[in-house]
Image 1 (cartoon, rainbow, N blue to C red):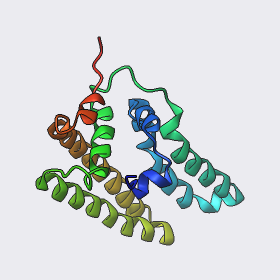
Image 2 (spheres, rainbow, N blue to C red; image 1 turned 135 degrees about the horizontal axis):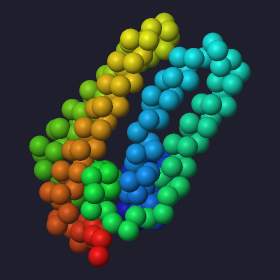
Image 3 (cartoon, one colour; image 1 turned 120 degrees about the vertical axis):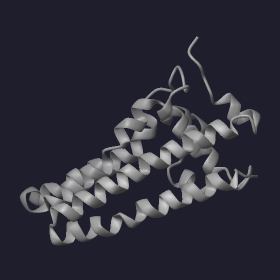
Length: 171
């Protein structure tokens, strides 16, 4: 029995879920989540008690999103390949990836996480500039990470027959 990646286990990401998550609609509707979360917390005063349902809906969407769309007819696009690359990344313990991909992905993840510091400060202090810098910086770096995952998938798609099977081209 193989060990499942902790992220995939928490999100219950089975093959069918990954196939649905590879739909570009799934990818693009996740992009604004951090900014919407930050906006809701920033507006906690005016939202009052409504902050909690808003945050609940955002968390719910983050959980439901990978399952909300049908598997795409084609995965031969940037957003889908980003998801496929993320699967390769999460499977790197089983099938090693090139070192340069691991370094860049880790660097981008750390830089994105570092942007959470000004975001947290901005939300605490109600500083719009720190909040915007943190949220936009983290989101931009996450998109750069997704772009790296596209490149990782392109480099690794022939490393394993399963990886190759994920690429669906339009007829």
